[in-house]
Amino acid sequence: MIHGVKGDPRFEIRKAVPSRVAEMLHAGEVDLGVIPSIEYAAGDYAVVPGIAIASRGPVGSVRLFHRVPVQEIRRVALDTSSLTSAALARILLRERLGRDPEYVAMAPAVGRMLEAADAALVIGDPALYHDGDEPRIDLGEEWTRTTRLPFVYAFWAGRPGAVSPEQVGLLQASLRRGLAAIPAIASNYNGFGPGRADVSESYLRENIVYTLDEAEAAGLREFYRRAHAMGIIPRVPELRFHADR
Image (cartoon, rainbow, N blue to C red; front, side):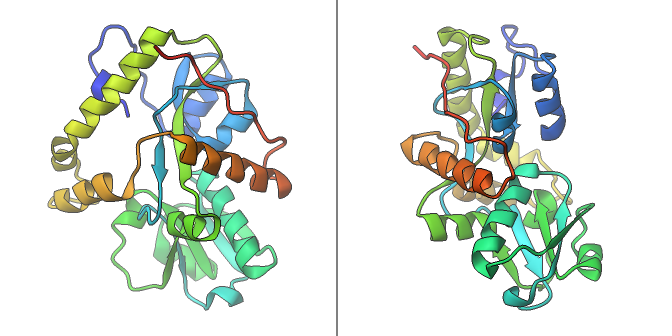
């Protein structure tokens, strides 16, 4: 999402892991950030329209690996990297099991996690490139199967008025440039080792949706509704958007 604005003097880019980006935004250290969708419920923000990191089926990079049949899951190790994915797992498991398993936070290593728990939620490269034979549930696919809606993992957000309509247009144009550069992005990214460009390009093209349309907005609202019903977030936030041109 930032590929197209790299080097643009109209933006000062600060890179950080998603949780740190959310912290900087909450603290007012940055005007705008790509934040995990659950963080939107923790502040007074507006969303840059039209841009997101989402899925409309299997996502590949958010997976629940399990060593026992799903109905027997009692303890789940959660990747500490993503509160949004952890909330998604809690929502889907309660609906699937009719109860809440015990959850423990762990570093993302599937083997060690499954030694300590019945199931392991892993995101990002550890999920996408894991080559073990453990049974797994793709949480993007499970969400869409049960709700008929996309799932939105992250988007640009900032305090209302933080960006002008012109800047919104620049961000939307940067997404188009980034989409055109997917082959180069994939070939320059090593992931869990060299020689994975084909996997990375397939993931970026086939698993990830970069738009924030009405369907994605509906998926976001449903996620917030379910998360609030479970007490994961304090409120169901209204979706507000920065003005575009």
